[in-house]
Image (tube, rainbow, N blue to C red):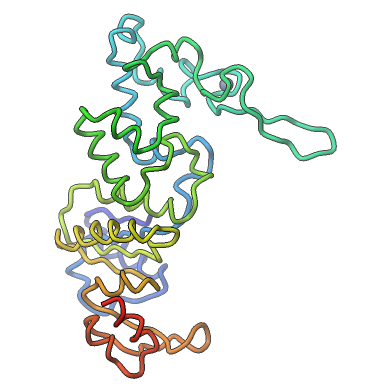
Length: 290
Ligand SMILES: [Zn+2]
């Protein structure tokens, strides 16, 4: 996610960011304070990053564990519940949950850690529980399950609720970043962005956000995007899904064909207008979605 924060260098940075997207903004730039590209690049390159760490709510979960009576009696702080810190993690696998097995003449393979059995923490850390669940149990929960489990925590309920809204309820909190699809990574970034307080004047660029989404979840995603628009932001979506096109305020139909056959603006305007443009090959599909 390319992101620009409000600062005195904004304009220059925005220009550079737009350049890397391969375009030039000719006017109206003064209306934009932030550019957010929500792409499908991985949220992390190592198994140490996952949904919970990327979105930041794992910090909150660790504090909850540190605040238990049991943890306080042992003087365990939030750091104790990080699998990246020596004191609480399993030292055999250094918090990875698996070990690399070197084989002679064959590529190395990864196997669950023989000591923690994949839990990533040492036995003392795993003794600390919230309603009978250890920190490793929480990482093994899906977003849906965690939403129920932490239902009395307003902050977690909000973070997890947004992830459900973008169709990610089935993902496990501890699922490694490297095991997520491009579409999942993109929706995690979008959910993270949706949780920020909206001050408007941001331009969001999304490349095919409906990839891999069930039609039911496309409707939920559209609701979220509409929310960004209602907060005074602009959402630019590159999309082949006609439900998404039909729900937008303005369509730029690029074609007429694919690859070398395309690249020209065939029609542009509100969906109803583009749907009746005779030169547009997309028109009849768009009309159906309308
Ligand atoms: Zn281990």
